[in-house]
Length: 233
Image 1: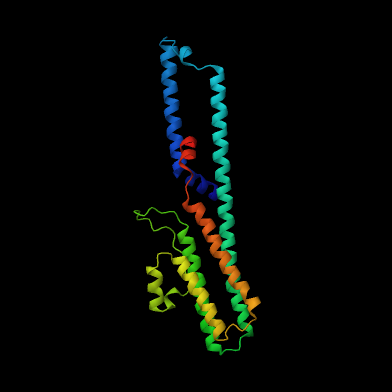
Image 2: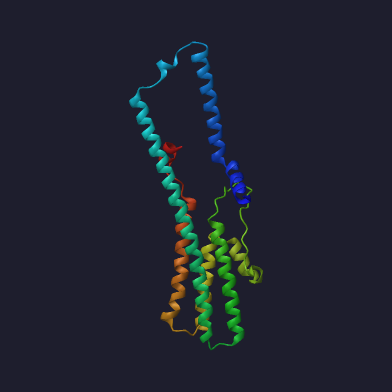
């Protein structure tokens, strides 16, 4: 019951509900005014203004097609967005999980293994948070900070890395490059002594995660074409 009331509250506060309510109230008020003028006051002008039946049928068909288009388009965007978010989470988890597992066969000192694993987890966590933040739609001149995402151990990265990430124009791609460099350095230091064909799985998952991020960004940042937006408003 509480969840239902909360959903109703969100619906009432939404822009779509406000616009629909305003249009309904205005239309109802105008209908009452016209009815009073036409019937009660005996002006009898409505019959001359009512369109032909064919015109009315065409309008009903057009409005139905527009409503069906908007509904199907919204449903496709919703399902695609949910799919991309789950794929993004799976790619980052798979990449981090395989890199952690590959360290079991390492011949490097334990201190170097721990340093690699801790740094890798921090970068993956930071990249995930930056990806989700990049998918938020915020106006450039807006003071809305959007959702805040927790990052594991971001403050433990060295100052130069934090500063470079902060100044980067494309933060997700920059952290992605740092993560790739970390893996290559791990291969060089024998922290990752797993055979290269098996290790390539981690690179594939990282690449798939970045590709999924840009697919999701297409939905978040590319608006409906103007012609369709005008017709379906």
